[in-house]
Image (cartoon, rainbow, N blue to C red):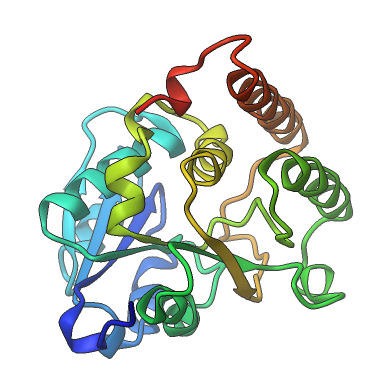
Length: 250
């Protein structure tokens, strides 16, 4: 069912770590008509991220200890739900994704066409590499996305983007508090959403790789890829009732 923009509360959450150099620029580019609430969750940064955030029109939650990218998102979504968000957009505060694309991410949810929308860097041929995506990440992304599509029964172009919009229903249903504390959290969220029958769409989203943009290096990226395949295997085994997983249990 289609919903009017004025009837929906949109919360933009920013999982931050050492984002002092890019935070203000990112926040200033967010379309004000498409963000009713801005939240920064700081994962125990060692720079001035929190101090800068407190001068901006954002709510700030800070972790006294670093818990990782996945752990940061858990705080983001819990806080957004408890502040009555209807749609939650995850935007990295490091400038890698364009905040001006928030309306395009949210629109399919408002129309009732999707429950989860991904900002795809691979939707348009050549866009990811032109934005500076390393070749090894491009190749790994294409391989992992192909495997995940086969497991999930989807036809999406980029299952490893960090630019996402979730409906409230997804976050209330998917047991994300059981997920990993690291980057595998993103893969687990998508496979959980697919398992529970939520509709997932993607829209083109340009990424910009700069020195300020956070990005995992080859070693951690390899571990992340292996963990993604492990989650895919867990989903297959769960569906076959061979090995039940708490990730896919309500």
